[in-house]
Image (cartoon, rainbow, N blue to C red; front, side):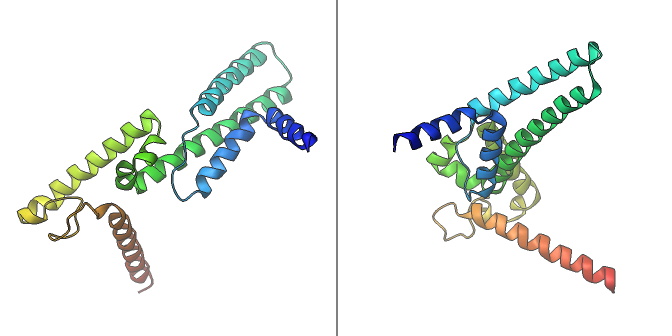
Length: 182
């Protein structure tokens, strides 16, 4: 029993930050809601990327074996891919569910400060866009970007806005296909 605990601990210690970043990226991609931001892992990964880039520059300056330089560069590219994919996945979730995330305190607390700023700006941009393009042309009772109907007491537009946009995109795509083959 004690050896299992020791094996788990040794496995955790031997896991590299790239492996942890890969696991975080997969978890984020698979989870239906946004997970806790891995700030320390992201910071360590950025520092490692910078250190590896400096190492590559030194190797190039010292005329090291091109294969060695190539291996270091591939490791940098792999880590950069994982980091960018992890952050991109989080931003896509924030864009899709920004109203829901803003309302739920537990989800809002999972975001980094930069992500919170991004979510606030996205909500403000969408609100401004809707007010300028559609809502200003409607009667006063219908000018909320969050309510679906006049009788609605709460802001319920967040989830349905995404669904309606997806439906519209599918209809536009189908019309384009029909016109291409007609």
